[in-house]
Image (cartoon, rainbow, N blue to C red; front, side):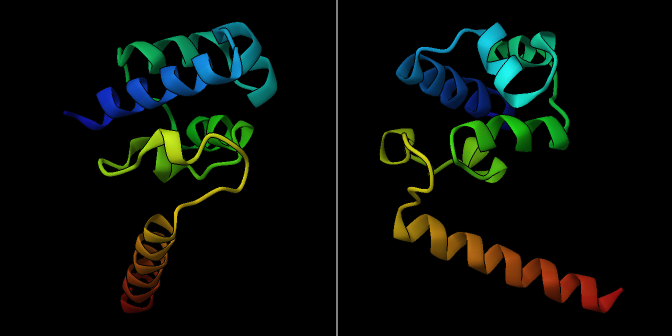
Length: 103
């Protein structure tokens, strides 16, 4: 499954759980309704900025919406990150920091 398909699957699950339509989610995230609709259909890539805004509506990080192992059912509400996901995120942050220091 491609990242855009995982994003669409997770985003649609979150929308359903929180009773959001594309218009209401777009308004809460301060992004265009078309961007939400395209992301939910896996039509086109969403910008990282928009993905961060959409994830924030659910109290999540952008990476969680596209992570292959992410279980949306374990993170339905704000700031709930399973310990294994938090550990992976910290590892990614450390790797990104190391790469930044190499430049």
